[in-house]
Image 1 (cartoon, one colour):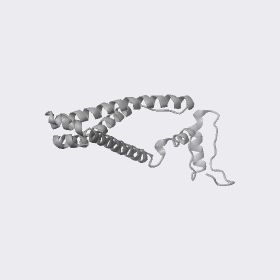
Image 2 (tube, helix red, strand yellow):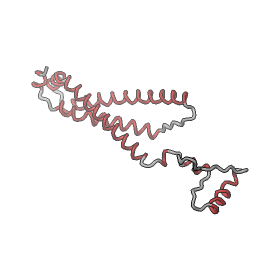
Image 3 (cartoon, one colour):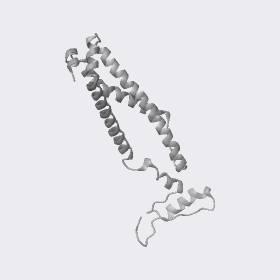
Image 4 (cartoon, one colour):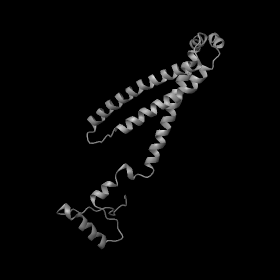
Length: 181
């Protein structure tokens, strides 16, 4: 505990691990005011599940990352649509409907999202292999559930981020869009 000249923890080794529960019970009877744990119980306290507010921190971090990702997608799609105003005007003057314009923009956003997901998974697996090469005892858990969640979150974020710019592009007047420089 950092108390100078004072002992804060004692380890007691049994002759046989099968005696652990009996020794812990005997020590509880002898020293009722002290916390006495087996090594398994003590080591179980060293996991991330026992850190106060850790899950809330991770959830908040994920929410901030999703928010930033959404804003980045929104800004990039907004910029893309602004740069393509003349092309959208040409499509509208040729008779493209609002639904078609929205569909084209959302399809492009979805395709970019899928490419980003594939690149992200490739980068994740490469990083995982590098980390495992340098730290072989560090457990890395990548499950199908997390891959599915990440995929759905990325696709939903890209489509939501692209929807407003697509809606704005679909509402452009063809004459104004053709005159845009």
